[in-house]
Length: 459
Ligand code: DUC
Ligand code: ZN
Ligand code: ZN
Image 1 (cartoon, rainbow, N blue to C red):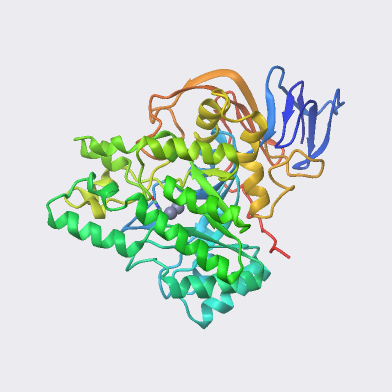
Image 2 (spheres, helix red, strand yellow; image 1 turned 30 degrees about the vertical axis):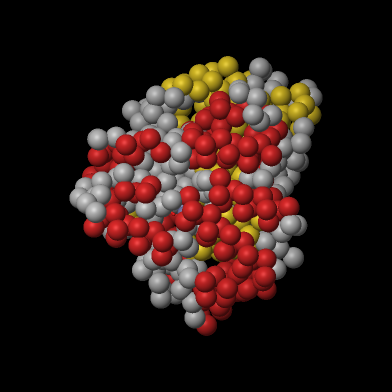
């Protein structure tokens, strides 16, 4: 089946032009004015709308087994919700338990993801170290299309990577042509503060941000950056949430070191006052790590994105329902960490980024799609509107409005961190592999239609 998107304005990371887009067999085959299409082609009338590369969310955790439970959103519901909001690819994470062989964990995640409706790739976390990990990293890079490895510098006693693991893994990633990424929080500092707060009787969600101060993130970001610098590897810092971590990235980039930073839509738009609520359910629903921060950090993050010091936007989509969050009713350290957002990232960034003048439309495309495709080496197949690229597209109506709510969202979770936010500008259509998967509110996601996307090593 072929598809013609007619009459819109194509927006990419580097240009805008009035052009039609013709897709066939899952690929973009022509971009230009007044294209002809066979009579059998489906047609989208994109008059008055923008046609952009589908969003790429480089940081999600579908059906993640974590903190004694499993994230409620699975690979089908999560990618379907993503497409309802214009995101056509996710990069999720394989997270082996300590001592679990990497390849066994990788196979688990690959099998769980077979039901995905949209395309997906995997970063693989390095949570422990021995010769088999060293070897499996090679297999993953050379045979399985994994070009990024994740390191949690927090979650001590579970998945935390200490400095020895970081050193070994960063070195190996560089040898193999893969990029290390880090969740930057000082895990020792966090655990000490958690114990102190609990012993002082601070057991509710308010303890969560207090146990994970910006200094813990800034310190870890600096440590990872300096290790990477000595080893000579580029580095990608996930979910930069505070000024301190951002400043470490800026400093390193000014010194000529290739360090990338990702910011979450949630960290840009939600502040730490959510933890002051006396309503446990509400406050616990916002427990994620790093936590939501004071407003001054949000202002810094926006500037980081505007200046290009932060290149990508993501969600860290990791959903737990109220009954799961209740596991931490008497102990905030037991509240499963995670919030959603994969469905809403594009709309909230358009509304608060483009409509406010903070971002141009092309900068929006770069921050929501193209930069992730480039950094993780799937450009121009993804993140572009080039002939030959995958036909993953979003048709964006800048005048349409919608009010975000857990009552109407497609995400499999009973809470939405953007609840009640009215956004102007949203997708009328989402196209994945040349097929319309969302049209004016009608979600047509197909279980299992998503493909595993290999990401070539850096050579
Ligand atoms: N942070 C979260 O909030 N959830 C999953 C993992 C993480 O690092
Ligand atoms: Zn993280
Ligand atoms: Zn994460």
